[in-house]
Length: 160
Picture (tube, rainbow, N blue to C red):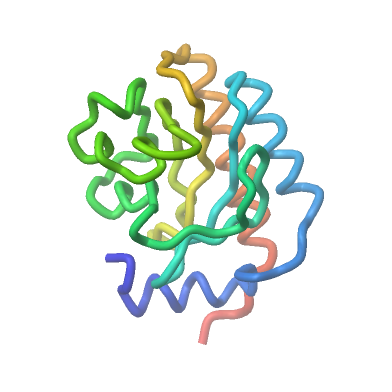
């Protein structure tokens, strides 16, 4: 699914990969981190080789390889939101390099960023401690994800 030509074409049509920082995306990430009270959050776009961070706080890198992608989970489900309260207890994440090693992620919450039926990326939040979030916080995650999708759509080139 990650390598689906139609999905990758849709992603590239938005001219967002490797673009410069934009305040609107930075604001979304700051709001998410504040609303969920987490130290790490990002808007990331998923190309065939990596998760590239359009906006990020709390992580010292701007992209990660597919092999360290938490967001790969979105290619295995139709769910719009994924919440993992404790990564150690999640079979698909318990041995993940960023769970068993620095930064020792224990909580993961993410919303799918989909355009034209294609998953282009995610809005996600991480913490180094297990936790739960409220229904209101999940709604805030979804609202901020919708704002990120609106921003992505505004950069769209006409379809061929």
